[in-house]
Length: 312
Ligand SMILES: [Zn+2]
Image (cartoon, rainbow, N blue to C red; front, top):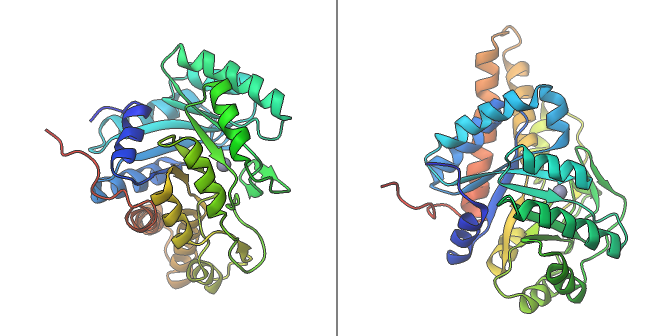
């Protein structure tokens, strides 16, 4: 199945009243984990790349060529998106590199500047058939290279104007989630009333959640049981994210739980088999953990399992 256009995937999610899960991949084994999980669940999926990954892989063009080959051979609809572009130049470069969708993050800018730069990215991307996700409001927390020290919840009226004036195809909103969590024990209160007001103003518009992982106690306990020291964090529960998807969220970025599952599996493997030094054995074990976590998210959080069209 070829790589799909973003609008096809979002239409599919809308028709099924569920959300698309988007996962950042950092290597080919994490890409395999995501694609195999999506195929097993018969679920469309969005594969994302961050600037940090580009630095990690060094030769981006060759890496992306390999990623594309995997996507083209995947048996469910997939989309390749560039996550968090911090500048107009970075977003335009992602468009030129052939991503089907780019996320431009001007949320740290003043409203007018975010509006102006997002509109510039949208004009450039749309002329080349590329989907643009923007962000309004501030999603707190830190994840990879993305950081904000505070939450500024998205105002529904401003969001409505922002969408009209920039032409962005989807919008990441701040309604209670956090990138990688915020230090603390409890779950963040999700602002369902705010989300409802956003969706009422723009029925059917694809709103996006970032920081959609939940850092469940079971995963934290797993990593820390084998020598990890990952602290708890304030973050939204899986039940809240699932409810938001039924209300009109159409894409959820969720990475931290995959990373916890992967790290926990590696720690467990090395703890239980200290004599083993075969990468295919320990990487297969940790890749399985990533794959199982993705299947869980597709099935019970975004609820997109079984929505991929049957191959003809
Ligand atoms: Zn994000």
